[in-house]
Image (cartoon, one colour):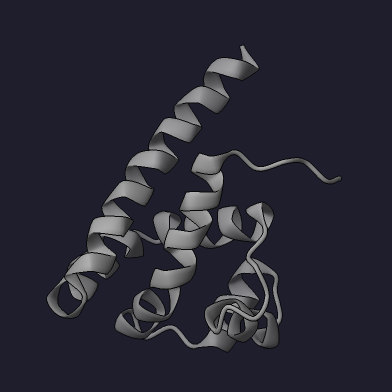
Length: 110
């Protein structure tokens, strides 16, 4: 199934792509562990982090929900903030966008 992403979704993917290596490293999660948890290969995580393969919306959701479900997103934001404040600003926007997206999705389901 192929659908067109909104500009908001594209921005969210760009933000996570930029932040992913920092989040992962600050939380002590290897590419292999993350890949296993979200159903991807380590090679795919590496390609996404090096911006050699664009992240799909499905991959984006899997990664975000993994971090959120483990309460690592908050911990990761704080850890990353110490070294990369500009990335954290993007993560805060990403979290806001995800919350808004979830609200709209639930509203559309009713």
